[in-house]
Image 1: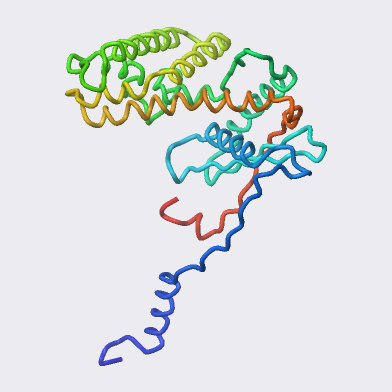
Image 2: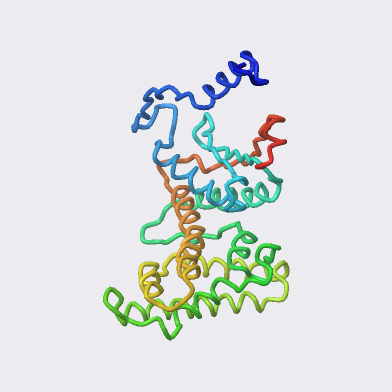
Length: 292
């Protein structure tokens, strides 16, 4: 065509393919959720969303977008049970399923205990290995964390660096509170690292990790960010630490909110908690994708 080797048919096919790639999708129709509780459901939409969101966070095995996890919850017809289904676009689900079965037992126990006034529920997060990896503990060392400094050691050194000083927007008392909290976290981590065998000392290990994520949840992140902002520390470290401590804290808040939901006497769906894997049939074209 026009003296070239491309035929008119080939040109039409190329145009057709480009149109499919560039074609604007239809505007989605609105399908607003009704905020009221359905007569056949015992979980409100907001509570179900909160539960699914917390479970999805706890199920995550990696921060990589190509290693995603999906979680949904389904109420039982009798209103006294719930099924948690977990799916993944890659990897083995067996470890996550085992830990979620442990979580299911914790939630069932919390549901039987009920809610008592002025009593803060004890929260044991089942994702021990995942938390150890985030801490960069020697007990949870992977090829990604091998040779890298431990998170809480970095935090302790950074906030006590000579270039970190009280200034406008960061009072001396706030800085001292942050340093005290960092010192306490570092002491807990040192105790954890001193354990010779986590399997033999499982109870102590869970207790130490539970206290670490609780104190991380109580850590003043605003003060930490303010303290690091004007310091002479590496910019990458200044950006990394608040986010890493926040992720650590989320293990506590997610578990705490789930236990509180289970202890709600007005909703009995946590009396029986089942956990099931959901297998996704991946198309062959995606399995062969270079971006997998």
